[in-house]
Every structure is written in C-alpha cells, then in structure tokens.
Image (tube, rainbow, N blue to C red; front, side, top):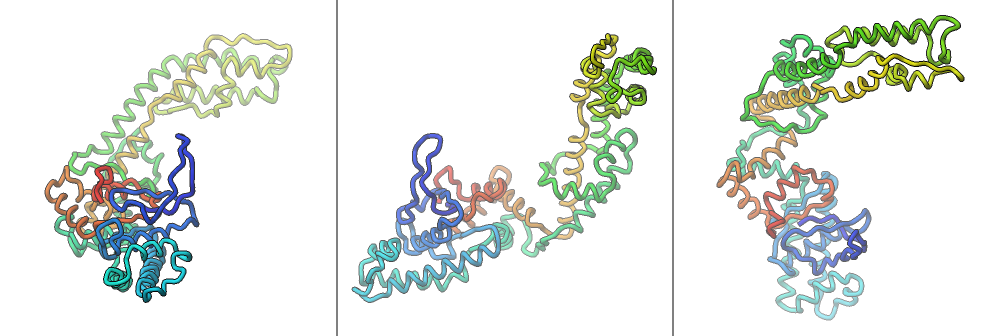
Amino acid sequence: MTVTGAPTPDTGSTGQATPVLDPLNLPLAGCQLIEASAGTGKTWTIAALMLRLVLGHGVTARMPAEVLVMTFTRAATRELAQRIRERLAEAAAVFRLPPGAEGDIAARDPFLGALLGAHPAGPARERAAWRLAAAARAMDEAAVLTLDAWCQRMLREHAFDAGGMPDDELLPDLGALQREAALDYWRQQVYPLIEPARTAVLHLWPQADALRAFARGAGEPDVDDAAPMASLADVAGTAMQALSSILAGIKSGWPERVVRMRGWLEPLMEPGRSPFKANIVKPEGVRGWLDAMAAWAADPAARVPELTERALHRLTPAGLQEALKKGQTCSPPPDFDAVDALRIALQDLPDPSPAIRRHALAGVARRMAELQARSRQLGFADMLRRLDDALDERRHGARAQRLRARIVGQFPVAVVDEFQDTSPLQWRILERLYRPAGGAA
C-alpha cells in the first residue's frame, strides 16, 4: 500500500475525473496509490488508515507493530508517529464515552463518527476502545521508519537469510574507504598505462582524488562480480586503437590538402589584395588556422584541430563567401570543400571516454566491495543493495522465499509516505516483498 495524501479532483488525458479519496472505504488490500499535493492531508490520511487497520475496518485487524510505515527523513518519522499516536488516543477516548454522550462527534469528525457508528454501544465498542488505547500505547514499538533504517533492521533481524552478519557496522560516510578503493584502482590500473591510453585517462582524471570524486557522484555501477574483468590497459587500448584507425583514415591526404589551401589563401592576405573584410579574415588569423590544421594532420594522436568552430567554418567555401567585401568574389579550390565533410566526420568520432569511465566505476566498486567485506562496514546504499539481492528469488531460491515470508509475516501491511521520492532500487525491494501487481497485501 502506498500513500501520499488526499487528491483533488483532476482530469487526465482520458478526460475522466480522478476519484476523490474516501479514507473510510479505500480498500486496504492490494496496492493503493493516493496522489496528493502539499497541504492536502497526507498525515491525517495515514493516521485515519491506521485507525481502520487497528479496528479491522474492512480488513484483518492489525496492531501498529504489524504495519510498516515508511517516510524519507528522521524528522518526518517522529512527527508521523506522534500524529498517529495522538489520533489513536483521541479515537480511544471517543469510543469510551458513555452511550448518549457522543454529542456532535459525527458532525465535528465525520470519519471518526462513521467508525464509532460501526461499533454499537456495548461489548463491541468496549473492545474497540481497548484496542485503540493499546495501539496508542504500543506506538513506541511501531515501525515508523525511514527506508534506510528499516533495511538496517531487516538485515540485522534476518541476518542469516539476508546473507549478512548481525554485527556489520553501518557508517553514514564511507569516504575513507572510497578514497582507499580509488587509490588502489589508480595504482593497479592507471600507473601501468602507456601512451596514448595514459593521456586519455589523465584527461578525464588528472589524479586519483578526481577519480574518487567522479566515482562517488556517478551513482551505482552495473557490476557483475562473477565476471572476469579486463584491465584498463586493454579496455582503453582497444578504444584508442579504434579511434586511431578512424582518425588515420580521416587524416589521409590532409597534409597535402593544407599545403594547397595555404598556397591559395595566404597570397590573398598580401596588403591591397585581400577580398575579405579585414576584421573577419586577418593575415595572422589565416596563418594560425592553417598552422593548426597542419599540426593536426601531422599528429596521429590529435583528435581535432585546435581551432574554434567558427574558425573551422571560416575555412569552408560558405565561410569565405560570408567574409567577402561588398562586390568581391572568390573561387576556393576543391580542398576547401572538404572542410565541411571533415567537421561532420570529427563530430562522429568514437569516444573512448565512456568505456574508460565504465571500467573505472566497476573497478572502484569491486575494490570498494572487497574493502567493505574485509572491514564489515556498510553504507546506506549497501544495505539497500544487500536486501534487494537477498530477496531475489531467481538467484537465491528458497532462501529468498523464506526471507520474504518472514518479513511480510512481520509486516503484513506497508504504508509509504512521499512515494514519489522512492528510488527504483527502493521500489524494487517493496515490489519483491508485497508484489503489488499480483494483488498481495
């Protein structure tokens, strides 16, 4: 069950109005999504549903310890638990009123009045009052938690089935281990590199700390721990070889072409002969452009000429035409026609950087996992991954089924506040447990 609050009427692309929330009759089985904006009563709604669960209104009766209530900050968990406690205590006091003393409860609080009316005065109402009061007292034992805190609790309470140890240490900041993992990767993979792979890697990360910062901010890599891992030298070398082969084909003929371009263009830069606007095509600029093109053509490792896009455009027939003085014409030789094709070819060059980044992320992550296993230290993301993996029935079969049965038996109902903040990994954990598509509780 996922809860975000009470919605206002809305129409989607179908033109049909979104149903307005009825907390008294909302089904409490299966997966229910409540959409809401800020200030529309999400906390009130969660407390109302807890009243129904405690009373068994339309569902099997549950005490707070059987209901997993999750939100995304510790402050929110404290406020939510207190609001639920207050609502349970308020309902218990109303249910204990002597017959005839209910007054205008139904007018002041239609939801509570409807629940009261569903329990006739006498033993049924007395039992309901007792359950509500007991539930209010039991809120200290309720699982109103952040998802991280709940994962930590599950890994500790079900350590054997979750594949962990009860005394694994949780560290809010794994910065020291991450730095060690990055340094180890740097020593093992980057130090042995030779050119041109070394330059390609150092262009991405001049030092190990830059790699650590990249790995820390890049999110979770897709790492198959069982698969053998090629060296960075092999990965970067293969990528650079492919780039070099294509570059060699592109540069073929360009040293001679630049000579011909220079032979046509530089004489036009002599004083009094230039057909071009002096503020656009200057003699020193032309020499610089052609020198950069010649240097690029002569250097097998140079990826692109050291020219701005505007300067490269100026060497095209269209760029030269745009720079002409009024009434002037020019007929560049065919060598200038090749510049446009060159610009396109350079834009389509394969980039070795993604392959290098993927290897680095996977390598640092593997080393990080080794260091954590040795030190028995976990971060919040590690807890989520471990619980998610432990619940994967394709990988762990009966053990994963047993873990799911125990957790769902412990928490038959789950309520998720601010569900829009749930990450794909967090949602997958909830999906593995409660199987909303299959109609589980």
